[in-house]
Length: 82
Image (cartoon, rainbow, N blue to C red):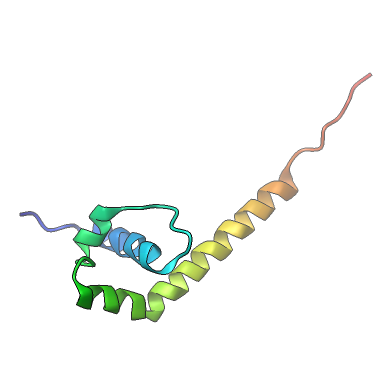
């Protein structure tokens, strides 16, 4: 069995934390849960108790809202030529 790279593991941790902490779940990734071992109760408890996971989720949501608001503000105004 191969070992996941550090990058893959970090992505898997974030995806697993999203599935365990966020409501509603936007991305269901059962492989992420397996990579980080979140199918075991002890690992699930560690992920859900991790403040880092909560902070990352809050940061991700804030960034998404900021990007959405920036795109809406930058939307070109429709101009009608006569």
